Length: 503
Image 1 (cartoon, one colour):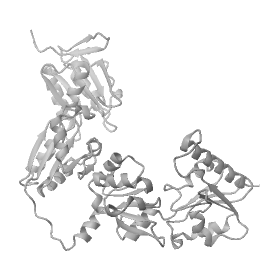
Image 2 (image 1 turned 135 degrees about the horizontal axis):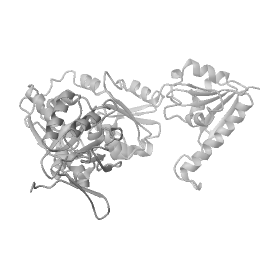
Image 3 (image 1 turned 135 degrees about the vertical axis):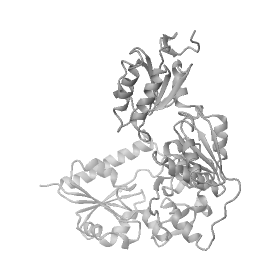
Image 4 (image 1 turned 180 degrees about the horizontal axis):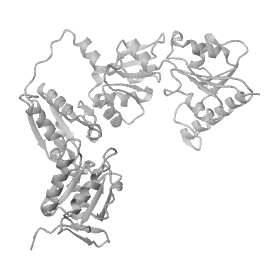
């Protein structure tokens, strides 16, 4: 006898008419219909599927042992739930082994925070399994609210309300639109996160979307004591909101006082941030930058964050100047120092091109990657040195090689930024060969990776023994001059330094 087939069937958000034709057909044909329920025995999923059930079908209630995190199970809540899923999978496997097809009912979509997925991961490797998608609660909420989730190039983010409020606030600030699920007891911290991200006034509360007793209200006006689990917070498309809510409103004129402050964050964590930089970040109304750098900025209530990719420096600078031209105080962030291969020159280039007329631009320095790497090993930058990027994305390699030759002939210590990447795998070997025309193979080289970060690795080698395959984009190299020395410190670690005197 062939085993039965497992189906995970999405029922949609609550309105029976939003169930798919395929879902209704499979429910009626199944030998076994399984559904989750609480201890009281009532199941929302079963009530939605009830019109399509037939006489003679076997029903398999999967009754949760706990519905809150309070339990006397020796493994705690997670242990109790894991045991429950294992037992439920065993029950379904017995039906499948007997040749019966099993439909597991799931509100919304089975793979979108759905209860079915835990059966799928335990059984799909042993039995044929098919998932029937359903309309999600997010799509339903957008529909009943009458506002689109996203348009054009906007970014939409789905978040669980169980995230810590600071993390939730950071993610909300970094996206244009969002849905936050799993409210109930988390509602207070979720609303706090929206306020912290400066987006509470634009957010909506949707409860039991498409059900007869659905409720819609501005998120800021909802009493936390009235919020059930089947609700969500929605931040719809800002482009649509601005067109509809401001259709008859003239754009506000530029106000006085806008400025762009380009801030250096240092090479890693908050310990590298200067007090001046911290103060500027705290005072900014908008933070603009490459996504990972924006994520390093502590969230402040009401502050808007604008994260973007690594190769749109000009667009980022233009956007910052436009915000400031309207009177806002904008911080553009860079790792290390903003004036070293970073955003300060990108902003000033846009100003030179005529953007941001009348906007003040200031630059707040930061600890550079070269300084951080040098400090880890001693003082290799103790005398004259040259800072050079090996990236040929913005300048031809011929220019880079000519400058390497000049620095090598001048006997300068070199700090080499952007030594390699996934697409640039030959440049470092060429740079090493260019320097070996002027330096001895025994010249000290510091290879510093992720200085100040969780994967920090700093090692000392020589120019002759440098292996380019061990270097990636997160590395910075310091190549010594003829006078740079390497000595053993008290703990045996290498100390690299360049004398200040030529005597």
